[in-house]
Image (cartoon, rainbow, N blue to C red; front, side, top):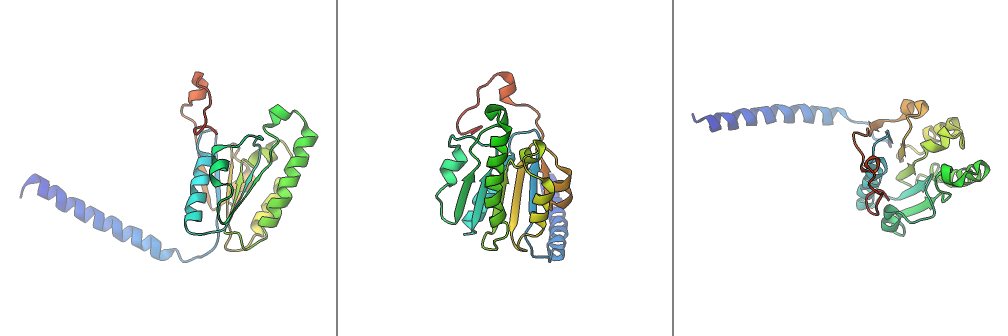
Length: 202
């Protein structure tokens, strides 16, 4: 038998074995409920991943709502693309980075205001997916109590999915999240002096 035919047979056997393993795992997954996805780390791509999942959900006609914390008054690419779309509500904190505002009381008031809206969404079974983008900064700077947020997440409607993004690894969120991904920076153009650009960083 030619060597390449041997290789083809071996490949087919390997794939059949892998298929059996995957199908067994699929068969064991019987729970139907919403999940909490936590994307954190110092690398680029956390919000990009979250908005990718959001796009996937909207593609299935799911109803979604976005809450962006620590974003400025400028329109980001994701806001331009998603805002106004069917089945989607979009809310932006709008004060910008805390090192730019340099006004703790203003930042806290803005955080509390957008959290009140998020609180309503997290109790509404009509929303299939809730995105809390960059919310971990709220805990790092003590603008929102993490305990309150965790309690709200745990009490949300059973089928509701939540995506949380932010740089910091918040222990309380790590404890309750169902799916966790750490995005680690290996190299970043900005550190080499390359300016942030539309469509890449914002």
